[in-house]
Image (cartoon, rainbow, N blue to C red; front, side):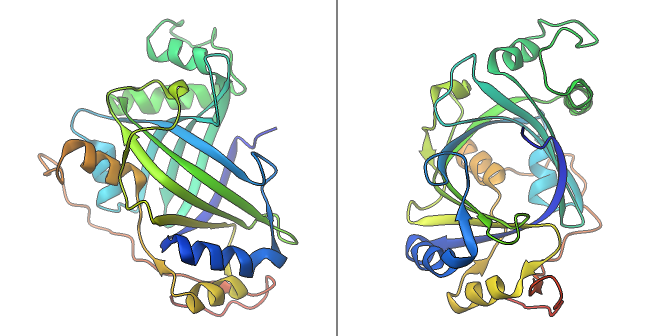
Length: 269
C-alpha cells in the first residue's frame, strides 16, 4: 500500500546522460532498482494546478521557505479506471512533506468537474481526510488545472538503507492543450534532451559515500523546478510579477553528508 503522509529531504541535481550512466554503475553495490515498473523504470504523468495570478508559480520561483503545490498523477499507461495519486506537496525549511491519497482517475475528474457532494463524502478515495485537505487548499488558492508534465523515471532504493531513494528523470515534457493525463506522456521538451534531473531523497542527510561520488563526477546541485520551467516554456517567456510581494526569507542551498548514519561531516558540492 502506498504511503499517504510522509516527510523527507530532497537534493536536486542537473546532470548529463553520461554522468547518469557512470553514477548508476558506481552506486550499483549500494542501491537496488525500485520494485515498480520494469527494473525501476516507468513513466510519470502529472496534472499541475495554479491560480489565475500564478501564486503557486511565484511561491516556487521565489523560493519561499514555505511553499506548496497540488498535482494529480498517474504512472505508466493509464485509463479512467486506473489508480491516480492526488497530493499536496509542501516544502518548509528544505523538508518536503507530502499528503496524498489514491482514487480512480474518473473520480478525480468528477471532483474537478464539481459533480460531487459538498462534503465530498461520495468520493471513492483511500483517505477522506486528505481529500478534504486537498479541497481546502484548492479552494483557498482558487486553483484550476494548469498543465501536464511528464517524463521517464529510473528509481532506486538503498540496499541497507531503504529510506534512501534516488530518482533520475529523462525526456521531460509539458503541454497545455490536452490536460487529460490518461493520454500519456507527450508534449514539448522543457530541458535539453541530453540532461537528466537527479533527485536524492533522504530522511536526514545525503550519505557521505554518495556525496563523494557526486563530487567526483562533478554533479552540479541545482534548483530544477519542473513546474516553473514548464510554466515559463508554455507562456513563452519568464512571467512578470504583478501584485506579488517579494518574500523576506529565501532558501539558501546546502548539502550534507552522513556516512552509515553516524558521521555528520558536511560536504559541499
